[in-house]
Amino acid sequence: MTRIHPTAIVDPKAALDATVEVGPYSIIGPNVTIGAGTRVGPHVVIEGHTTIGRDNHIFQFCSLGAAPQDKKYAGEDTRLEIGDRNTIREFCSFNTGTVQDASVTRLGSDNWILAYVHLAHDCQVGSHTIFSNNATLAGHVHVGDHAILSGFAAVHQFCKIGAHAFVGMNASLSQDVPPFVLAGGSPVAPRGINVEGLRRRGFSPEEIQGIRSAYKLLYKSSLTLEQAKAALEAEAAGDPVAAPHILAIRKFLDSATRGIVR
Image 1 (cartoon, helix red, strand yellow):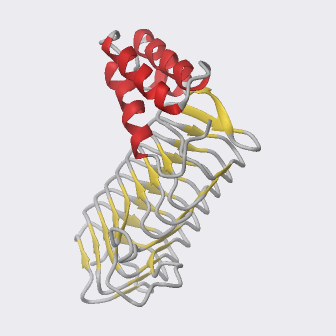
Image 2 (cartoon, rainbow, N blue to C red):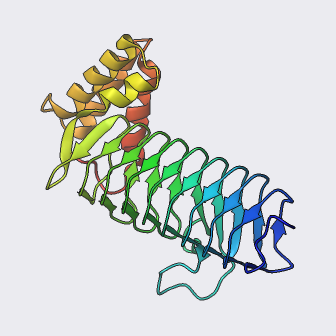
């Protein structure tokens, strides 16, 4: 317990691994579980039914596990779940879920979450994402693995952002962004695929070319959405190298709930 600063307030019912560090003036509630190696900075409040995994670094002035900012919330026991090895910078706020959805807000592992990011109730964020300063998710937003949100990007409730997508700075997003797509501008529009991100993650030139061809079918061919779905299936059948990525785009189109940026 010497890793907990004497000015911190940790409820005796909280379950903290012996290697957890807690900085000055932080407050940790009774229903909080924190895994080995996680560092909690000064002036952090962690409350609610919150589970945090291993080796996270939570910087000062964050608020994690507070009640959802939803007028329908009536005190139900909903949750916040955070995975492993996340960096969560200053002044971030993550709320618990609501019973109107899955009752849990989730952040995966290996995410890079910069200052003032807000994850509202019932958001489901994957792993290896990057959220730049002041990126904000309204309730019920889903974000896939390796997605990037630039500074001050704001996402409407119930939107979905696919894996490896990139949302530009100051974007006000009210529709879904398919996997691999780069979206930005005002109003937000598709701007190509996230080529640089794919290269950095080891995608081969053949895979990237297949994804680019799928993008052209969806956005440059004047096909209706239903026609584009059929064309993507045919494209995947003829391109075994890129087929998993093309089919990921195709599957996403069926799951889109607010229409896609197009």
